[in-house]
Image 1 (tube, rainbow, N blue to C red):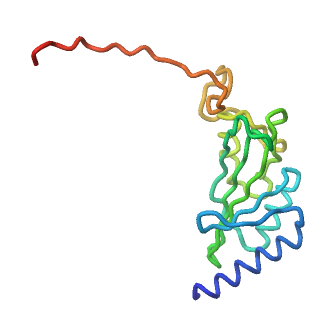
Image 2 (cartoon, rainbow, N blue to C red):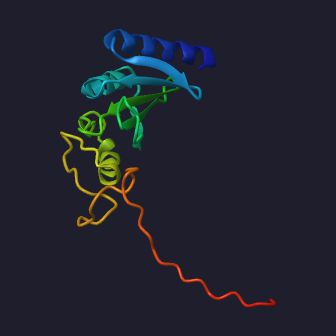
Image 3 (cartoon, rainbow, N blue to C red):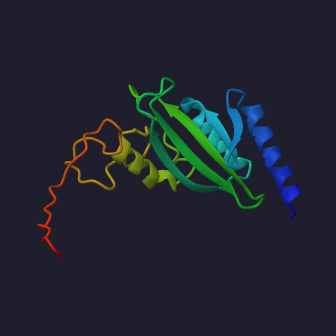
Length: 166
């Protein structure tokens, strides 16, 4: 398939999603198509993207923008269509006072462990997740270490004395 034909297919996918989700804000970043959706629209948008050919779930990650007025956290979902080829990054703003985003595990089963990681490290909850438990840290761990307001721990380091005249 030529690059132009795949670009036309990607443009048709974006146009179809934009028509179905008028509140979504589309743009580009670093050569990829990016869309910002409201968190209550995320599951429906992801399902529509899957129906439109973005059938491969690449990953989900979170970012903590501690002092950003439009929402402290952001969840980013990467989807891919290998048929077109075409990549789409979905950004969802998440307020710090209510850090939750609906689970995508019903649309993309592969989101399971990525959502658990975001929960474990950032404290973002994913209602509808089948087993939202810690993934990387012990169950007794307090807090979420990738939050920018999480206290920085310290491990004492012992240095050997430097010998003079070496």
